[in-house]
Length: 160
Image (cartoon, rainbow, N blue to C red; front, side, top):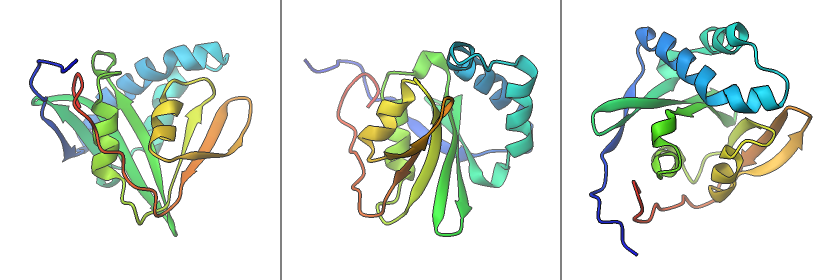
């Protein structure tokens, strides 16, 4: 069945230093359930870890229909690019926004690495985009996407 709703506008804008606090709050909200399940949730630490790592030059704000709803960072590290801080407000999760963002930012010739929390539903999103598990521990799953993996082309759905 075809979704009758019009396609939403999804764009990325460069992050500003003043975006740090709302992204730190978003991170705390997005990661809370997984961190609590893993026995690792600390409301101060989850926010401070983001603030300590935040680099506006590497970060893009995800804007859906002119509203800031998330973030994503691409941090170069030698011959690999780290995909970090992909957070979406709960109101936009499961609606194809993450798929559209990854299709916009992943270069088929690039090598990417990320980590995702054990048991996180985000892992399946990354697997659909060609990421495979390198290693894992009780908390984190480290994944890599090798060059030559074609981008996933979003299909028409709720937002994609």
